[in-house]
Structure formats: structure tokens, C-alpha cells
Image (cartoon, rainbow, N blue to C red):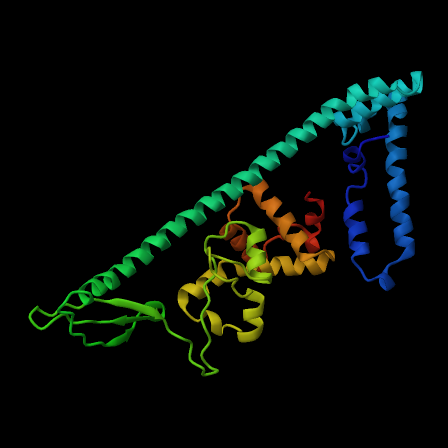
Length: 328
């Protein structure tokens, strides 16, 4: 039998047409169309088998210089078919010996894919650890004024304190403190904590997307279910839930809005492909991530490419995302 790769060179649009047919609701499918596609599938094998013997008899035809008859896969198939026609099928041990190189190539490809996936996750973990160190250092810096204040408070003379509350970036309360009567005034900023959100229904808490995400699977998880972005923190809300409940109110701040814009076309593409291919969204995200790893694209690059598609560029995975079905 010819290999699948060789057969697909005959009627190359057959799989795409079949997928397009099965993508329709069952009541709209044409039985005659499906039967015709099955006939073409059978013709693939018949054409290739007959071509082997026709090439021997009419070797001067220019047809044999055209694909797929000038392909090395066809030469291998022809050699095996002619051998079987003359001597019968090879013994089992000969067949095993012939298939070993194919297994070796498949294992090598799988090994490369595994190494690429491990490297991606390693880089992601390294980035998250670096961000955690920065956040810990920032936290320690914010605690130093409180340490100084408590030290002065523990002295026998104590301190005289006048407090003024001010709002600064990210809703942090700062208390300005003035030291004892015999010393010159010194303002010591003390971080008191995060402000509680007002109960006014018009005020919506702002949420920042995790800028440490580098993979499509992780990005889809944040959109669909919410993630734990920092160690020891509770799971954040899903972007889908925030959009449904608050619209754009939860990302009014410019940096939050920009982070959303740099990612939105990716999860919108996952949603559209889920409908087009009638497959679970998690599987679609996995296929897109394998495509991302194969091309070495960043999330920002993919988002920009998808944005160009909305403006008229060619689809990344063909009409109705049919190309994603072939990514394994």
C-alpha cells in the first residue's frame, strides 16, 4: 500500500473538503458528496498502483516527470510493489528491518518536540522567578520605613505623631509621621495597606493581566478559568467573566488596557476555531501552542499577525482554521 503522504499528493484537497463537509450540521450534509469523497479516496490507491506498471510500459511519457510520479516516495512505493509482484511480500524480518529507519525518524522528531517544549517551560519558570525576586525586594523596601517607625516607638521617649493620609499609585495609603519634639521634623512614609473598594456600583476594581505568560495554553487558562499569578495569592478571575460582568470598566487604566489589547486576538482566535472545527477549546489552544513552538513566535507576534488577519490578511491556518486539524 502507498504511504499516506504519497496518497495525499493525489487529490490534495480531499481532506480539506471532507473536513468542510463534516463541519456542517448533520441535517445539511449531502450523502452523495460523502460517497464521492470515499470513491476518490479509493482512486488514490488505484491510480498510484496502476501508474507503477504504466510507467514501465510507457516510460517515455512526460507525465512521469510531474508530481507525484517524480517524488522519491513514489519511487520507493514502485520498488516495493514491483518486488511484491515478482516475489510476493517480504518475510516478516525483512519488513521489520525496513521499518526501523521510519521509527527512528519518528522518535527523533518527538525528541526534538519534547526538548522544545521543556525549553519553553524552563524559560517561563525562570521569568516568573525573576519577577518574584523583584516583587520581594519591592516589598522589603516598602517595609523599611515601618521598621524605622517601630524602632523609634520602642525608645523610652517615644515619638509624637501627626498623620495625614494620601492616595498614591495602585491605591496605597501613606502615613506621614513627624518625630519627637526635640528633633527636627522628619517625614517617614509608612505603607498601611490596600484600600477597600468603594461599595458604589459604578466603581469596578481594576485587574492586571499576568505579563509573565509566554505560552498560549497558559494565556487561554487565564482567559477561561483564571490563574494563580503569584505564589501564595488566590486564583484570579477569568477574563471571560470580567468582560461578561463589567465590559471594559475593569481595564480603564492605560497599562491594563494595553495588556488586554496585546492578547485579545489570540483568545478570540481560539473561540472562533472552537466553533469552526467543533473541537474543545483546550485542544485548540494546545494545537496553537505547538504551532507557536514550531515557528518560534512570541505571543505579541502572534497577536499582531491575528490582528492583521482581521484587516484582510490571509488566515494563519487556512479557511475556517482547517489547518489546525493537521497539527499534532
